Image 1 (cartoon, rainbow, N blue to C red):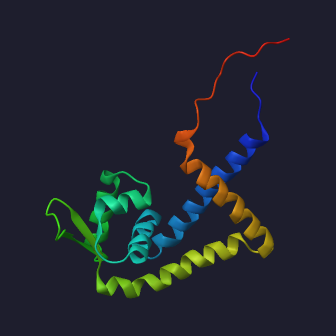
Image 2 (image 1 turned 60 degrees about the vertical axis):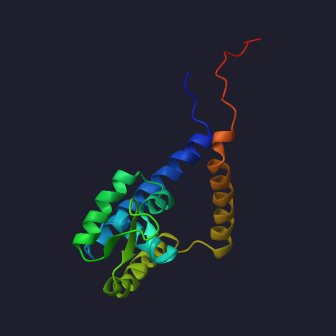
Length: 159
């Protein structure tokens, strides 16, 4: 017999919120000629600074290297970024925001902020702060989940 627990409901709510937020941010970014994943790459580059090694960028984004390559190809064709051989090792590529692209980022931060403002409209700041604290704690535990012992599915005694 299947049981839906409060944890399952919480998990589904969180997953649905994340999915709908990505859909809306993707829709909003498309109006500026980007996809939401491309925006995440640009935002991460802006935050990490110039000359990030592709492998480190993929790790920071939590995506596979092959997925990142496709995103970088499209961003390079759009004039947002360029890739160069790393000075320390020619086997590596570094990613750089084009100077003209930096000026084009400010309105995109505004787009992202407007989506969040709409989402959080009417939610008290204390509730947002409490939710943020809970989610950060869950994220920290999720990042350590590989340390969790395997869950036993042994049949429980009916007595």
